[in-house]
Length: 354
Ligand code: IPD
Ligand code: CA
Ligand code: CA
Image 1 (cartoon, rainbow, N blue to C red):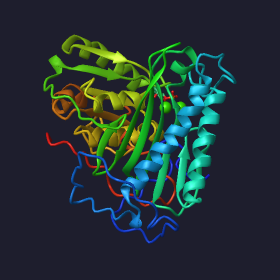
Image 2 (cartoon, rainbow, N blue to C red):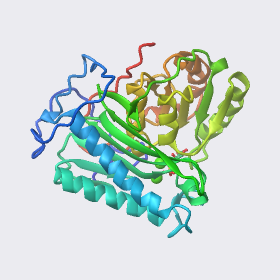
Image 3 (cartoon, rainbow, N blue to C red):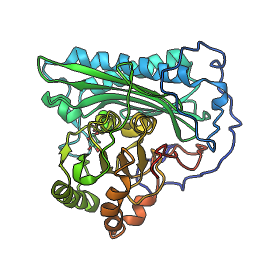
Image 4 (tube, protein in one colour):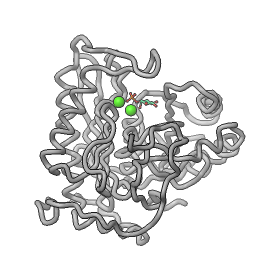
């Protein structure tokens, strides 16, 4: 197996800065579409180059991939769930729709990119060109449990890394519920801002936890960090306007970006859960770090995404407790990094508040 498999004990990550020696064929000079309003300056330290591929093209490719995936989900709504199986435990579900959606997204990306890029799909693992600095991270159906029950919080998420830095993405979030489904389609390109259904979005301006609506999630592994997050749930319910648990990480991130919630945190999310959503938060003016306050990459095992303004106060509650976990060192190890993948140290957060 050529990739880190999520145990946290696979080969140590190789982090270094530098231009890739690898080339990405067939993309330079291809169609360039117009940019969105609300451009953000690329942080100076992040002059990525992108091997000559332009960000609007990547954003639009991600959007089309997510749109195609979400169509497969649309077809399955308000019908009996097909092919329901469990994965690592009884609550970790997968359905025929998860697999068909991923197949549709991969077929589109292969058609568009001709196999030049590497792809990580939740259901199929790593495919494509292992030499590429571009790595697509795809969660075809984030929130499978909600989907299987007709509960309205699930999404298709398509994100793209270049040397480990999120550069483009799209999330199609399903809203409403049985007999009244709708979608919100988010699109993002690094330096271009983020949009929802074509309109620029930005995080909220609430600046205290007391005035904040928070959201969190609980993964399928019910270990020490999961138990601590149950304590956080109680604590933040006490000191904020409330904590929601909706069950789809990609949608949770997008709602921070939309200004509906002020912060979202969770342990042990995977690159496919977060790749598009973290960039959507950052490009909407928010901030993303690990739960012990380090710069975040999609290969990290804990995440706090916020509007920037409540970040420090959230950290004040969370970080010292996280350091007391017996797994605190293991939490600092990164996972799911493809063997030999050349990555820049961290995705810098674009918040102005830090
Ligand atoms: C899950 C959802 C959930 C989060 C879990 C994820 P899945 O993804 O995003 O909100 O708490 O950690 O694994 O399995 O529905 O794609
Ligand atoms: Ca997921
Ligand atoms: Ca999924």
